[in-house]
Image (cartoon, rainbow, N blue to C red; front, side, top):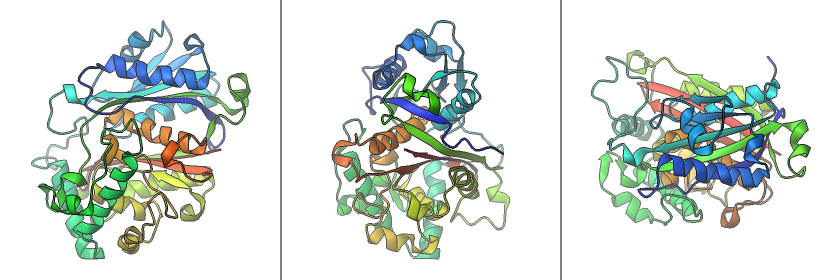
Length: 387
C-alpha cells in the first residue's frame, strides 16, 4: 500500500471565530473561514476545481457549501463521519488531489450547533440495545472512575488538564472560551457526571474551518516554497460498537486509537512519537479523554500519564505540548469543523504564525479525533503534518 506522505500540500487555511454565534448563520461561518483560506493561499476562488463539505447537523448535501461560496457547477461532496468529519473531508480531498483528479481543492468543515436546540451532540450510530439509556458524559465518567482505580489518577489530574487547556485557549482570539481558570475552580465546579465537572466537558459551539490543498510539486504555482505544510500520514479506524458485550473491554484505552495511530505513524515513518512529534492537538471532549489519549497515542506509558500531567509534560513549556490552542475544551466542538480547526493550529504553529502560543521551531505535529463513547461506539482519526 502506497503512503500519502509528502504528496499533498496545504497552502492556505482559515478559521472562523468559534462560540455562540447567534448573529451569524452557517453560511456566514463558511464564508468567514473559506475567504480567510483563499487570502492565505493567495488564490482566486474561481481557481477551485472541486470542494468537500464536512458537516453532521447542518446540511444534507454539497449545496450547503456551493450556495454561500458561489461554487458554480463544480463537484462538491458532502462528508459525514461523526466527530472526525472535518478530517475525513480532508482525507477524501487528499486522495482526489494525489491521484490528479483535481489540481486545486477546497475543504470546509462547519456546524451551527447552537441553533439546533439539542441538549447533546448527535449524529452518531445508534445501537438499538447498547445505546439505550446512556449519555456521553455518563459513559466517559465510567471511564474516569475505572481509570482512577487502575492507575491512581484523581479528579485533580483531570482538573490540571482543564486548567492547561483554558490557559492555552485564553491566548487564542478565535476560541469560544478565552479565559483562564484556577485549579480550585475546576475542582469545585458543578458535577455533570461524577467525577466529571463543568470544566471537564467541552461546550456546544458554532464554527467553521477551511483548507486549500494541491499537490506538493504544484505549490510553486500558488505560493512561495516556505508557506505551506505537507500531509505526512492520515489514519482512520471505526469500531464495531460492541464494547458493552465484551468481557475484556476495560474502559482504559480505545483500540480504534491504536489502529488509527498505527496507520498514520507507518505512513509518516514515525517510530517514536514521543521523541519525533513537536506538538499534538487531540480530541479532549472530556478531560478524561485527553488523559486516555496520552497512552493510546504513545505519548507516555499508560500507567504513568498522571505523573506526566503533574510534571507539566504536556503544557506549552513541556516536552510535548498538547492542545496549544485550548483544544475542544476552549474551542468547543462543532463536529464538522473540529478536525480542520485542529489542523489549522498545526499549520499556524509550523509556519510560525501562532502569536503568543508559538512554540520554538516545531517541525512535525499530530491531530486526533475521537467519535462516540466508551463501550458504545468509537471512531478514531489521526493525522500527521509537517514541513
